[in-house]
Image 1 (cartoon, one colour):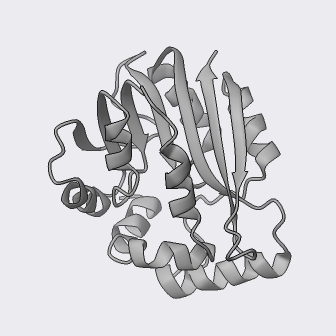
Image 2 (cartoon, one colour):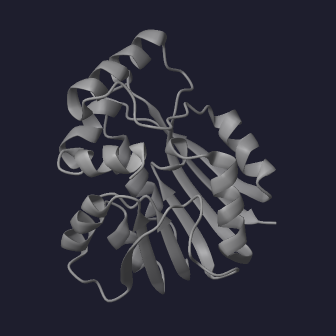
Image 3 (tube, rainbow, N blue to C red):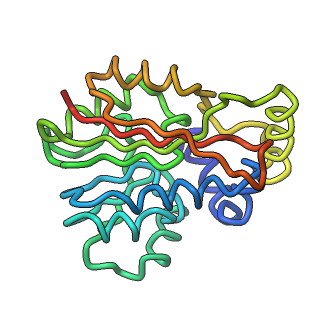
Length: 214
């Protein structure tokens, strides 16, 4: 078991109660609301489904969803949350190297995941398994506009909630650095939108990014 698997297996039991505290706002819900605008996603793979927060909504907008995570404890919570949804298959996968065939999915969704993995490797694998013109949707925290004190508070909250100052593999993206990564991965960015929680201005911003396989 890798460090990441151990961490997320341990974090599963406190994730839903703790992640908003770590971010310092309601960013996760705000990003979910943004996802409601999507439609006709086709055959979708969700990487880092966690406790299934985004999975049911993806299923409403897709012909099928394969919800994946590296931690079985997270997958069990997704199964309980979706209650055997007929469109959803829950499967343990590592997004950096999957078992899926080439050009298999129409859409790949990363919900609060891309900043926790090897970006270039993950996007190369995503490119491989997407159909020509397939869609990439990424929702992620970014540090644009954050003060050093805001970041330090996040680190302390992370230690209090999850027992570590940072999750394994964490990369702190700006909007520009994430766009550069996605472009280098062979994707054409269609839209980006920076989303904030006006009730909690000191917390992380969220970025909603949509791109297509070139």
